[in-house]
Amino acid sequence: MRHSLTLTIGPARFRIGSAWKEPIARLRALYAAYPQEEGVADFTVRLEPAGVGRRWWRPSVRIAGDHMLPDALPMALRHGLLAAEMGMNLQMALGWRRHLLIHASSVEKDGRALVMTGESGSGKSTLAALLGERGWRFMGDEFALIDLADGKVHPFPRLVSLKNASVAAMRVEVVDGARFGPLMRGTPKGDIAHLVPPAAATARMGEAAAPALLLFPRYGFARDIRPVGQGEAFMRLTQASTNYVALGEAGFETLHRFVTGVPALAVDYESGEEALELIDALWADLS
Amino acid sequence: MGEPAIWCRCNEGEILLRQIDGLMLAYHRPSGLTHMLASPLPEIWGALDAEPVSAETLLERLSAHYDLGKNALAELTAHLEELAALGLIRERACATA
Amino acid sequence: MSESTQDSGSSEEGADENARIARRRLLLGGGMAAASAVVSIRPALAQTAASVLHCQIPVPDPGRKGQAIAADGSVVPAGTQGSFPGSGRPFTGEEVKAALRGRNLPGTSYEQNRAYLNYIRRLQGGTSGFTCYASLQMPR
Image 1 (cartoon, chains in turn brown, red, green):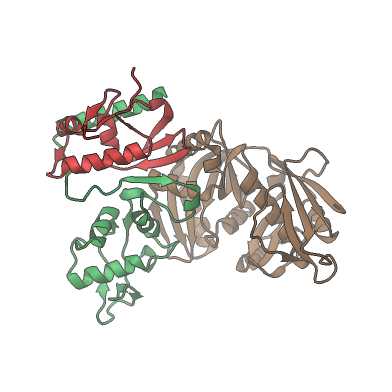
Image 2: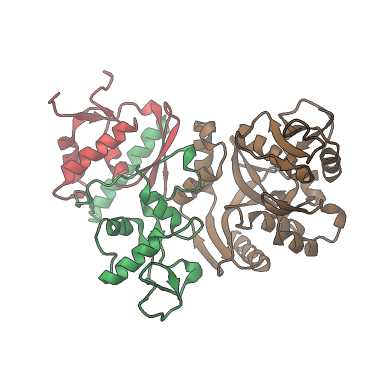
């Protein structure tokens, strides 16, 4: 392709190609702290014109790569950065086999990881970003990679994808404006801005941590904490994993080890501050 | 045809079992499927072994540990058929040891 | 492989123990027509499946504790005419399953039972109890 970039995030290396210059330039700048040397990539992502002439006329991006979804709709070029991120996520979700991949955010403190999983809107991404600014090591806002041999959580600290109200919330938290990508309005996922994770997240992205607590956060409900049984946690995590079935026996063993070794709680909260306070208290109770 | 069904647990190499809370997790290697088994299936599984037995014999074994109601045999047979359909136990066709 | 034998062995011993402590419980023949006790995990289950038969369904959701249930199952302010206060304790999956087959939820009147079941049928993903209700719907 005309423009390209090789990028390493955690254990995965991506080669991203684009028919346009701008998305690659944006990625190169926002991922400046990540290894960008050339090498054999695990996955390729291509941003292609969605049809004849669509490179210039109402430029429209089709996300292509090693793994593709048949029904994915093309996106506007002004959302090219999001398209590249979605392309990388898609490769991980459909193609990664070296770890059990769980749709979850994770942060680390004292060598132990807190894993948060939930549907879109649960706040798992924003909470991980907030904790990353408040003394925890940010490990990832989208995928937690569980080691098949020892059960540890490996970081996948790509850019944080902030949606809607979270953008303003994080602008209060992070004073360095250079850590924010452009605000993309009206994308298929709402208004999106990317946030560059703290320096420690990238510097230590090869460092795994043993999971100590699993939370199922839910934003917008009155404060409540409920235990989640191992059976329910197992079932919910199979549904939050993109490769549980593909991994076969290794996935079964890894998930069983996870749910029997890690306490699980459902947490309802109405504000970020309330959630941080709850998490601090729960974390203190662990030790 | 017409003979009473007998059941056994003789394909254990095909199944990986783990306990969580009160449930039994079973990974069935040939199909790659995971099943979560709730009571009474773990108890029924526990009462079976590699020796094929009839549902009546199995019911007797279970009655040593549990109370059984009047429809117990019909229910037990339905559960055995369900376990066999998942490949977790075998009906009759056990390989000779 | 050897572990699978161990596991099942110990569950049998556990059963023996239980029997000695005279905690005999009704295992089979309770007239529940051999309800399926298996949930199989399949990739296509995404986000709907859940917690087998040990799950529970609060009425209403803890996030709306203190509110009442109208006859059509909607959640309304406490004291609304014709509504019922929420249940004091969550119902178990088994109780709901039995109620869906025609038995009353424990401790409820006829109308109250109908209102609660309407509430449960209207549960949406992300609401407490939804995954439990979804698991009761699954054919296996």
